[in-house]
Length: 530
Image 1: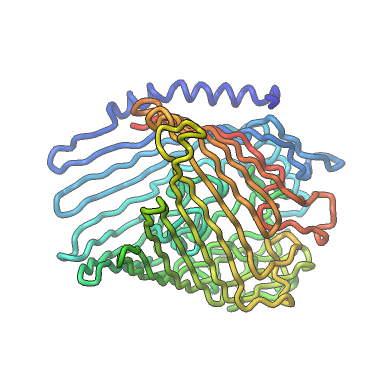
Image 2 (image 1 turned 135 degrees about the vertical axis):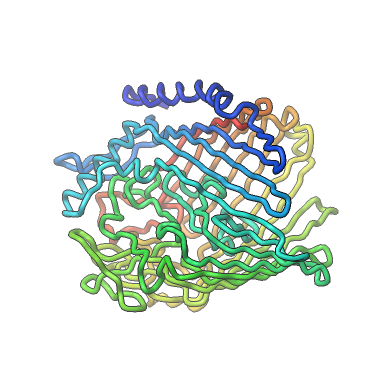
């Protein structure tokens, strides 16, 4: 892989930050554990450096040139990110207080400068307003991510009040029931496995009621709507960043379709709520849940001159170059999960299902100015996951592992129950491929363990049946003493068909993983834990 001249300055700065990490940790936090007497408490966290490098050139248009040309980028750093995270807790006996803070800073690499310039030129061409420094807006962050108090509200009731995360479901990759929080996909996309780092915490009242007579517990959630407006729904990579869908990395789509968090179809101040029963019976763990909240994926609500507005009276405050809004409509989700161990086969089986009546989808594969701008149609959808965790002895013979290794397999299907081809639903907004009735994905992942689990090579595999695309993620994790952790991985996308930025957008067949064409990366994550 080629390291170009302009990557040297960011690479040097990233290297210096890595060298400074141990000294900073020792100076600021000592051993990383604080004794607070009575009450007692702790302070822990990490310092982390992320680096990633493009393995391919980007075909996205560079609007900074008189004649459009390929963006380039192969061999250049796409990410040089430093993170400090602090996790604090204090126990007062009758109640406990917790807080999690995180600060992120990114070096503006030459590649990101190119993306920024391209986005600024696209703004000038459309007449849209442009705020200099989208990289800082998307990637730099100082946030008190969580702050909450826990206490017993009775002999059977545990209460958690404040800004927190609540994970439902059997998998982080597939969100049939993990539907309470939106995710921030802008800086690291969906391949990052640390869901807690990507979720957007919410201010909630969370009550868990123990019911031993029935072998389970009932969880009640209520979000009063006190969060800042951008805490609802996913942050999609729409501002022209490194994980924007190809070929839009150099185009700020949000300039044409800004987020509307005050829409009558889904206002960020609207309360959301849910309940979940979790139990264990005859060797099977299960849960039943219901949640009323926001559709996590942003939905394009076109202005009347471009398409049919959705639902209630549309809420518009459009500037030059804007065609509508992105909204998060309110929906209802009913779901269930189960898991069971089969020790005789060294297997754990898992299943998850989520039913969403009247889920919104964009339609109009030939709509103007973008596919999907025809409007919004509501359809009933069933999301299904079937998974299996299998432990194999043969890895000891074939790969010389000191102990058996576990591999995970999962099949996902997003099924539109009342599918009608005439609805003309787009598979992905901005692409002209028509949505199919079933959207099926298969994933497999496994890790081998060596040197007392301090050297752990792994492989993840994703196959997109919808578009016949593949993603391979070979990786290796190193555990170095009590404090240092290193992960190196390659994110390799093998795409059957890709959209060229020069072709007619209405002839485009991109779907599913096809939006990740030309996105292959080498990535490294070095962590100092304290």
